[in-house]
Image (cartoon, rainbow, N blue to C red; front, side):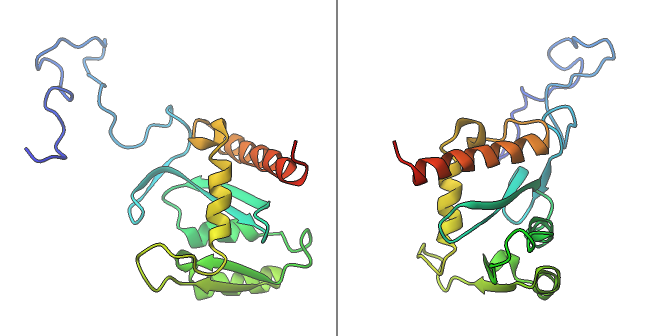
Length: 183
């Protein structure tokens, strides 16, 4: 067997080595696919090899949270960005430019952000595979690292997406208070 093959002892059917403990005759010890009873809406992003949910955040140049969305991992970054930026222009009238990485490059997304909010989408691409600070994208990565210090945000424990979004907002508020008024 290859290194990624399941262990034959871990996925046995009924009557194959151990008796079934369920009355319906099925042995449900191995999870396959999505299960609505194990943590709410989930998905799989084959490009990033992410199973579960993806977090999208919009931050200002200081790294303070402007908006956040939690989506199933199967939703593309471009589609999630449309939902993330929708309706924000009245709340942030001085914003003129949104900077994003290459995963958000799309003419339709740029048109949507320009028509819906009056903002300009600037895509910053990396020239090398090695890590280098390219543009202002590091601000978002730094903000994700700051949010990851909070226990309830470090992993996705929540059943409902709204709870995850609320906890991200609470963690961002706590971070903002700590940065503005250090103890």
